[in-house]
Length: 212
Ligand SMILES: [Zn+2]
Image 1 (cartoon, rainbow, N blue to C red):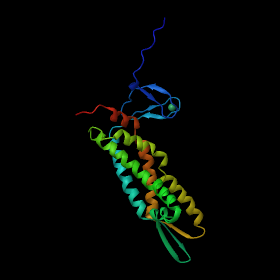
Image 2 (image 1 turned 120 degrees about the horizontal axis):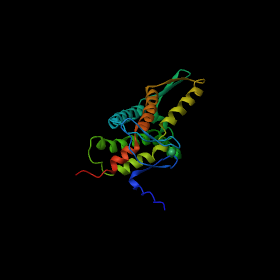
Image 3 (image 1 turned 90 degrees about the horizontal axis):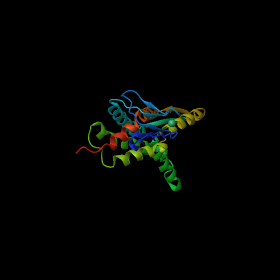
Image 4 (image 1 turned 180 degrees about the vertical axis):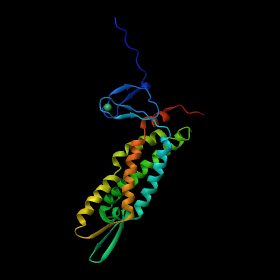
C-alpha cells in the first residue's frame, strides 16, 4: 500500500506564468534565480537593493516621458520652410472632428499608459522598499500595472517613427530633436525596468501580513 505524499500547501507552490508548470516553491538565495525547467521563464530572482534601483529607474522614466512629450521630436525642412513637432503636437494633430478619438488613443498608448504603469509601480514599491506596510490597494494597483503592459506602446512608437522618418528623409530634410533621443533612452529604460522587477518578490511582500 502506497502512502500518498502529503499535499503541499498552496502558498508553497509557484506556477510558471508562461507554460503553467507547477513547482514546489523554494526561494533562491539573493543574486540567484529560479527558472522554469520546461520553458526557461525566470520565475523568481530576488536581488538585494533591487527595489531601490527600480525606484531610481522609475523616477528617471517619469522625467523622460514628461520631457520627451513636450520637447521637439523632429523637425522637417521642405523648400526652405522648417517645422518642429513634439510628440504631443503629433498625437493631437487630428484633434478636431471625429479623428479626436484616434488622437486621444494615440496619446494614451504612447504617453499615458507607460506613465501610469511607472507611477503605479512606484506607488507599490516605495512602501515595500522602506519596509512599511503595503500602500492601500497596492495589490490592485500592481495587478493593474501588469494588466496595462500590452497597452504600453512607447517602444512601438519609437520604432515606427524611425522607420517612417527614414522613408520621408528622401523627400525632406529631417532632423531628430532632443525628444527623439529621450524616447530611445526611454525604451531602453522601460525594458530594463520590466526585466529587473521580480514580480514574485513584489507579490510575496504584498501578501505578508501587515505589521501594525
Ligand atoms: Zn514554464
